[in-house]
Image (cartoon, rainbow, N blue to C red; front, top):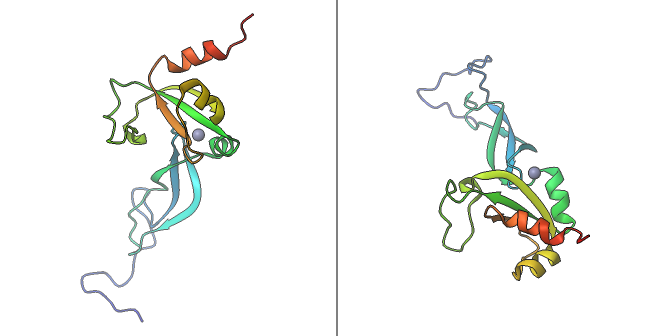
Length: 146
Ligand SMILES: [Zn+2]
């Protein structure tokens, strides 16, 4: 049973103003490449107010391409500028929203990552933020010697 709430107009207008709507396609930002992608979910304003834009970014995830690489056993190295990135949190992990990406990316198999950096990486960690120069050094190390 619906109980009318005082103060609300009984009928919501069908038109939307300022390109806003009470439905919105949910998007996540890829934690690797920072590209927004559709999650396939639809958000609905529970009061049916035209409160949302066409797309709403609700969090971080992996875009289809980087999800595939992650599930194939790769870890993404994302180069960040420490001068412009936020402080590291207590556990030494940078939050994705604090990372200032330089745009340089590399993918490395998890076993290779462990061998090169001597750091264990869990299978559910898709991304590692690295300082400038790390990817360059890595490319020099794995490049053919001839
Ligand atoms: Zn991506």
